[in-house]
Picture 1 (cartoon, helix red, strand yellow):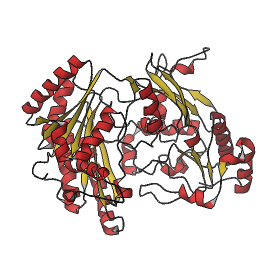
Picture 2 (picture 1 turned 90 degrees about the vertical axis):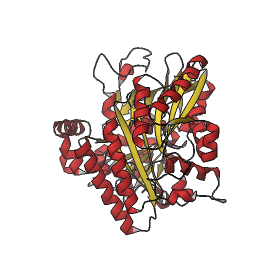
Picture 3 (picture 1 turned 180 degrees about the vertical axis):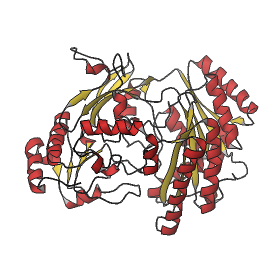
Picture 4 (picture 1 turned 90 degrees about the horizontal axis):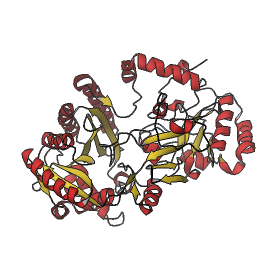
Amino acid sequence: MKIEKDISLLYQELCDRIGAEKVKNDETILVSYGFDASMVPFRKPSFVVLPESRDDVREVLIIANKGKVPVTVMSRGVNIAGMTVPSEGGIVLDFRNMNAILEIDTDSGYAVIEPGVTFDEFTSALSKRGFRCHVPTAPGGAAPLGNYLLNPSGSLSNRHLDSILDLEVVLPDGTIVNTGSTAFSSPNPKPCRRYGPFPDLGGLFCCAYGTLGVITKASVRIYPRNESTQVNLAAFDEFGSAVEFVKDLINNNIGESHIIWSWQFYKTYDISVHTPANPYIPPELFDDARKAPKGVPYNIVTTFISGYTEITTITESVCARVAEKCGGRVISMEEMGEISPGTVRAWRQFYMEYHQPKMEHNKKYGLGQYLALLVDATPQSTIEIEKLAMKEMADLGVKPLCYYCQPFDFGRYMMFRTFGFFDRQDKELLRKVTATFRKLYDTALERYGATPERYRPDPSVIQQLGGYYDLLKRIKKSVDPNNILNPGLKLFEEDECET
């Protein structure tokens, strides 16, 4: 993308319009923003801008649009998929200073937050009010808004697929758009309704990865903390039985969420019991992931239950009956603690404290490079995808090899995420893993009718979208004719968006 503005003039204009203290061009800072934990190649921006208000964002976008300067948005920098790696010579909008929780409405059940708010901050503020939010497997330093805009996995996905209610968006030309109920110019519109009586424009910006507009605040769903909360644990020796158990519970409206954990994944939490100064990696993590050690269940299903005490007590007994019917058994937290103490600690944090457990294994404990396969499919197709993925990746020698799986939208489909760690210096293994994942994606889509959970820069996937993608390109051309918003993602190639 050709930048049509002298960099020094651009720097001066940014400083004049929003203040020099918010614009960074120090070489060390710029280099630190040029990559994330993914395999996306390094690209150094020209500036890092730390806006403090919607008006700051608007000014930056107007300047960038006029000079055709690419802009990439970052909420808190916890990114493993390359979606915030900037375009070479562009601008990074780092939202860490826009981190206000603007409103918590316990009557209607929503909160209004800025993009720089972290889960640590959000869950803590909600807890003081007796409320909680959708908590994914991202770390506590990640941004709720950044996760919610991607249809995340998490603790309430069975009840609500999407946490987003209402958005405030700035377009490249400076136009400010409010979606949902705050689109109305009444004196005090409440951001409690996603859409109606007009179309759902909020959905346009979900899963757009910063290519259609810059979100500066959002209203998101929150939920009361109930009188009683329980986490039911059910153990299974094979994945298909775990899926049948989850389907049975969902069909009978039992549980707020269900997650199926592979044994090597939940065992990795034992690493977090220790410290980098006193590291411990369970040796069984380097065994064949397809065969769980004696006494270690191949899969554990966690079912989150909340409500009045009488209801949760009865539900626990029902879970035990259904588990037995599906060839599994319910186990206690105490028994699970004997198998994996780190897992018990992590699940208590996740479900009972509504807080993400730490997952920094690849950085602090040297497990190696992380790569993942992430697809959505019907329950029966997911069973076949699990078999195929485990065989293909285990045959390559990727260790540990982990996955988790959970239903979305009351079990209409399931998200399956498998990931492994390997020596980042082993270029040949990296090549093989990358090629295998590409083959697995193709097979999942073609043979099993799956869809990618996240965008992948793969022309073969885009080509399958037909008229949907044609319409999306027209929308992109309308709102961002100069293609300044995250062009490095390559969702819209540069020549497709020229005027």
